[in-house]
Length: 258
Image (cartoon, rainbow, N blue to C red; front, side, top):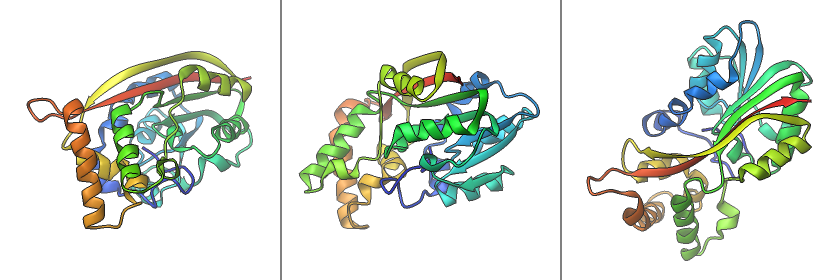
């Protein structure tokens, strides 16, 4: 997951916490690297590279990869893996026709200020015929968690629209945005991915819902908010054995720059 977004994104990520509680995010998207099909010598941009797990997998196939993420902590973690990575905002890509492909996993839904600006920046960065391969949260992604975070924030006097950091479009909406941004769609899909969490949902909330949690003071207020959100989710997401299942919905595509 990336923090490549505006002020709605977390102040910064805890890369160690992410590795403990959200490693499934890149691991479940390894087949996206096969969609990308990187070749030796290609120049590829990993937009919202996070801690560099998939960036490293792309580089292992011989491509020259640059990771970009807004989180300094993630960029440091990526560099520790031997990945070339820099801090940057996905809304403000400054590259001009210098990449054969742009790759992105679990990052585009954090770029909410102007998704079309992100697409335009990707198009500028690609050479003619270059490919854009990505996966991110689609319409309905983590719907019960999303609703509980918003509803509990509102119940505690916060405006959820000011806190909400995510953009989960329908497949049709995003394909239209890609086409209006100068891309032709090669393949696309939107699918459900119910995901067993490695621990309690409170770990997920503390790792991945930072913009909501940051509305509450560290300590009792924040802990009470997390506990209340967790209580809202128990009936729907926690089974009789205590296993939490997150209802992920993923939007995946390959597009070519016209």
